[in-house]
Length: 141
Image (cartoon, rainbow, N blue to C red; front, side, top):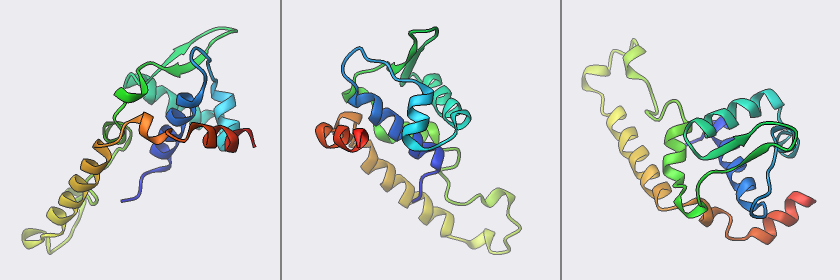
């Protein structure tokens, strides 16, 4: 299973926000610079995270973004489900595959995806930032 760059950035953004001291906000430009991505792409990622209730955004001069839920309530499996567009592995509905009537590949891929998500469901954001000091040291460079 390979996650999209979008989901990867969403997860890394949540991890970064989880590492901030309580009450401290970050910003799209700050996170864009940290991950070396365009601000436009980061705006899309943060909008999706906000849409699903993972972050809150405060407008204005002293605004920014922060987690909107406790770290131990943000389930990683659910974040992946919310950010990934296609978790099917393959899309047999648009295929001209002649094997489709007797193919077992889609079932096998579905089972493997279920297993992957089951493992990811056992993790919460606080599990991913357990080594907070190491992450802060890496980020501060």
